[in-house]
Every structure is written in C-alpha cells, then in structure tokens.
Amino acid sequence: LEVIMQGRQIAPEVPFLMLSAHVHHQIALDCMACGAFDFIPKPFSREVLLFRVKRALNERRKADELLALRAAS
Image (cartoon, rainbow, N blue to C red; front, top):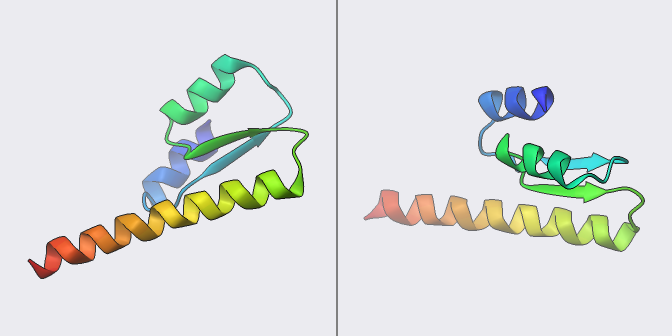
C-alpha cells in the first residue's frame, strides 16, 4: 500500500496495477482506496494480465485526450 501511495505522489497519471497472492477483499479495497487502478489476484493467466494492462492504458489514453480537448477549448 505504501508503494502505491508513494507512486501516486510521484506519478499520479500512471495507472498502478496491484498483483497479490493474498486474495482478501479488504486488501483489494485498501489498494483501490490508495489509488491502484486495478487489483489482480494470483494466480492469473497471461490473458487476464494483458487485458487488464490494456484496459489501464486505454483509460490513461482517454484521460489524456480529455485533458487535451479541454486545453484546446
């Protein structure tokens, strides 16, 4: 959780994905509350990881486009 919080302070635009072998709902909620974009419990498949990374990057791209449109207005 500390890594997520520090990372968000350094680079708030980066979508952080938390990977964990601990599959407790409270851990996932805490990670999301600290700014993680997504929580991926282990074990996970390559396909799941790629899907979630692509989703995070797509959301980041959308946010960048929205900021650019607002700046152009």
